[in-house]
Amino acid sequence: MATNTKDILTNCLYFTANSLSRVITRMAEESFRPTGLSPSHVFLLMLAIENPGVGPKEMSDDLQLAPSTVTRFVDTLVSKGLLERKAAGKTVGLYPTPEGMELQPVITEAWQAFHHKYCDVLGETEGDALAVTLDTAARKLESAGYKLTCKCGRD
Amino acid sequence: MATNTKDILTNCLYFTANSLSRVITRMAEESFRPTGLSPSHVFLLMLAIENPGVGPKEMSDDLQLAPSTVTRFVDTLVSKGLLERKAAGKTVGLYPTPEGMELQPVITEAWQAFHHKYCDVLGETEGDALAVTLDTAARKLESAGYKLTCKCGRD
DNA sequence: TTTTATCATTTGTATGTACAAACATAAAAC
DNA sequence: GTTTTATGTTTGTACATACAAATGATAAAA
Image (cartoon, rainbow over all chains, first blue to last red; front, side, top):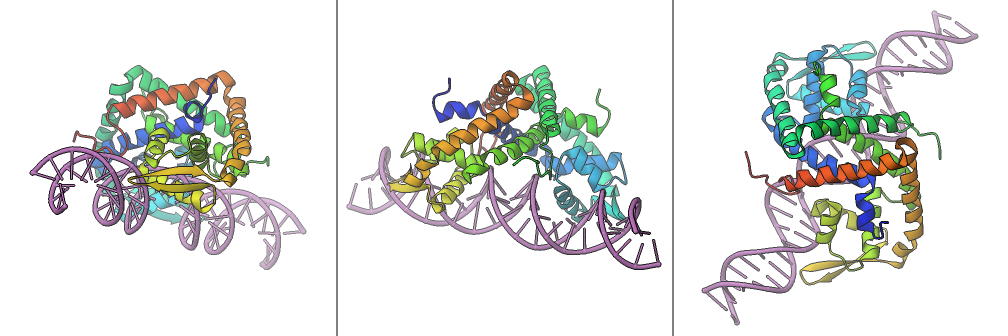
């Protein structure tokens, strides 16, 4: 069907997934600006608030980010005084500081604002359904061997 | 419904879109490895092959990348001897070199391999439908004011 | 014809993210 | 009880990508 590259592009999951990722990232950054943090940093902080003492490993599983990425994010949050590391032998426990805790209401509000913002455009049902669809697809692809830091057996 | 952050995460379009983007990027990089180029570089080269003399502006519209990003990609392709810039007054024309042209079959093959790879996991119908869904959603959000290099009026 | 405005492109700089290697500790094997 | 192995964390480095500012060049206005 598709005869030229432009048509192929819009039917290519790499291209469309990344286009969507870029536009939704712009929206999320705008919505989360009141927190002073990027969306991913916010997620990390929320997880630590809800689960004090959680380790980077668990974080990287939950957030589906590479462990080194989690380390960098934690560095940033620590330097902003929102998070604390407590070494415990091999592992590290992450704890929100009081300043980190104080951000919680701002974060919650930003999160809702973000949700409204994309639901205004996509429709609430469709927006939520899309998130579920993407989550399902991402998980399927991951279980098929495209996990993080995976040497991906073949070739 | 969602009571904790983990649940919220998997229902958050920022999170799910980026998770999918990361996993599909890993797959695409693997598939395109035989070309020696990253997937986005491949797209750019293909567009130049199909449309010799095309300018960076048009590229950035087609690829939905910032103009500066296109400049960097063109730099790379030029330095690899696959693409040539020809200045034409205010604009620049991009032309594939013979070496660039020679890559075409390898690229086509890699593209098909990539498509097969994710369709094997998601199903062909579902994989293709997903791409269309993502493209539609991304375009809706962009027309709603979340375009590249846009100051995004509000707030 | 000079000035000004507009638009395309590039450069400087910053951020998110990853991989591979280094480091550190705990568990297992001998 | 020392050596090996496995696992969690951080560091070095690199790439994709973006924004904002600088540059350059044509077109429009004076």
